[in-house]
Structure formats: structure tokens, C-alpha cells
Length: 182
Image (cartoon, rainbow, N blue to C red; front, side, top):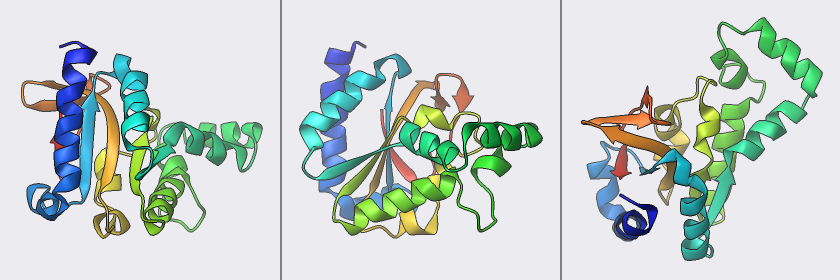
């Protein structure tokens, strides 16, 4: 389906879920997230439309900017060396259990900060998570995300093949702890 025909229904569905937040946790297996799926090639069209429609009540958290911020916290050469040391386990670079802030921590902090200002967090450019070991379900199941007053909306470049959600059209993804808008 083309963007023009498809986007109206998706935004109508998103409006419905945002207006009926009381039902969200039940439909999302206790979660507090909405996964807004769209074809990866149309990402900028959907983000542009969302900015027009939701600009006042939301805040857009751009993962690509957080990724650059994370890399810049040391510098490129230090990051490259660190990343090469963990080439076989990149998730340890971007999402670890130690106290050193990583990309996952930056994402969760940005979501919490947005919510604390009474805005609905819209996570965009989530395709940047590919290869980091950070999965959508890691974010959706985080205790702080599950306890937000407003739901988290994740803009998710993906398709449905059969009954399977495919992140970036090829990587299986979880629909658990969320309501899917497709």
C-alpha cells in the first residue's frame, strides 16, 4: 500500500491508542509501548507527518543523535578501538550492566526526561539500533518505561511477513509488551 493511503489509517490507529491509554497495558501484556511500524523506505515521510500532527504533545527522541552523542563522549578513535575490542560482542559496547553510561542508558534517560515534562516520548530513527544488541523489547520491558505515565511510541521501520514482524524488513522482532500499529 502506498504511503498516502497507508499513513491515514496508521495515524488514526495511533490516535486511538493514545486516546485510550487505560486499555494499553491490558492489550500490551502489561507493557506501556506502542510500536508504530512502517516501511523503512518511508521513514522520513512518517516522521515528518508525526511532527506536524503531534508536535505540541510529544517530544521526538532521535536515536541517531544519541548514538553520535555516545560516540562523541570519548572520541571517535577511542570508540573505534573499544568497539574493535568487542567486535564479537557489540552488545557489551552499547548495552551493558556496568555503571558506565552507554547508548541504552542514554535512550532510557531521554525517555524518562521527556515523560517527566509531561510529553509523550516518540522514539525515532530506531533503525540505528541494528547491530548494537539493543532490541525493541529491551526498551519496552525496562522498568522505567513500563511505569511511565504516558506510553512510549517507537517509530519502527519494519514489515509484517505472515505473522512475523521484521525489523528493517529482515530481522525478526518482538511484539511483546506493546501494541502494534501496522
